[in-house]
Image (tube, rainbow, N blue to C red; front, side, top):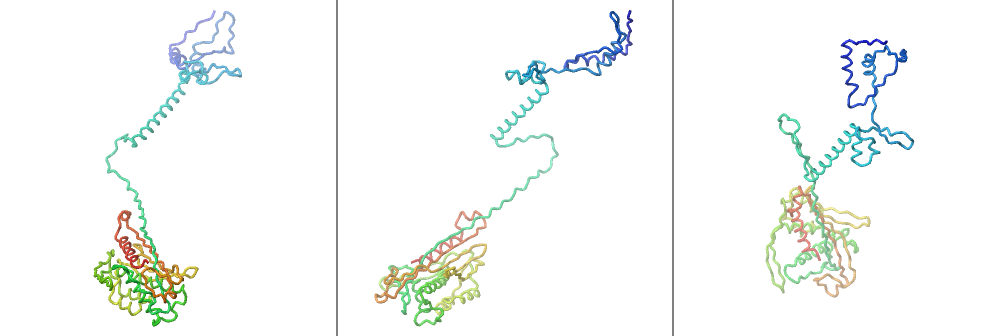
Amino acid sequence: MAHLQIEPVDVWRKNLVTLPKLIWPARRVDVCQSPRPDDTRGVGEVSQYNPHISMGSELSANPVVTRRTCRQVLRDGAHCKRPISSRTDLCWQHERGLLHRLRSLPRRQAITFWSSLGLAVMGILLTVYFGLFGSTPSIAIFPTVSTPPISPRPASVSISPQPVIRETAFSTSIPVTENEEQVVPVYTPVALGDHHQFFYALVGQIAKDTIGPGAKESDSGRPNNGDETSDFFSEMLRYLLLRWVNDLDSDASEIEWQYNLGYRSSFRPGLAVPDSTLYKRKKLTDLLESNRFSRLTNENKYWSDKRLKVPLHSKVLFWSEESKEHVPTFHLTIENKGKYSMVFSVSRGTRIDNYGFVPQNFVVAPEKLSRTKTYQVMTRFRFTYWPKSAAENSVEEPYTKWANDLVAGLKAAMEH
């Protein structure tokens, strides 16, 4: 007969400690005990192997843990090996219906799925909220030590204002009678207040003193053909622009008289020159000495008591250039670089050689019509002003107004 061996109390306590590991509800544990090699039990005999000792040592050391897998049979006859939960028999891919698929997920995969879904929903809600209200809510996470707030300095963006540019052009027709004391025919106004009368009288006097029969001008300065005559009057008109600018900027008392119209006296205030100052006498003298028309006796008398009025720090300059076709252009510049620039450019225009054609209001004797030709002189004006700020572009500032008034006065006298 087999003898029953009683274990001590300490061994039973050890077995009681390891017993919960065998029956843990989260796992399914199958205990399998192989017979020992030296087990020679016969029929009707009880082995001397102590089952309590082996249960406390072998079973707790190497338990066999099995997990639930899908029972779906694949095409090759094998079972699907995807893990499933304890509530279903198929995995999420082989289950049918959304709820059944969600129930088939194991615990770890279910946690991952619901966490990702929650984050996605939260991101969509935040995106919609910020898109509607346009501001991020301020959330205080941890209390901070009260320190003076540091506000970032706003980036200073300097936008340079666009320059103000004014451009215009006008023409002047000058009839010229060859080999006559009166080089430019007399202009007869039809009404008082016609400024062309004084302008053409001045042109005729300068032409008479320069290229008339009794003129003292050297032969090198006399025009010999039609192009040279056009260039001669273009250069003269450049000089008259300076003189007319001075007249417009200065106060003047005028008396107009005509035998069939009577006379009229008037006072004309000068234009408002911005930042007005008198041009230095030395600079004005040097400028006039460089021009052959200002050296004439009558013109020298005119400038003897005149002082050119210009904006502060301005510079006045006569200069010329020649194109590739050898056509000269005569320039008059009044400018203060970086502030404003006013440029008058005078060049030859059309020449009318047909006999018998003269501009309007000129009186030419019939016997002189065959020797009278008309020369057109083109004057181009460009004014540029660089404002200090963009706000100056919204109103007509003084420099632009002065330039517009000058052009209006010059056109009233010279455009014909």
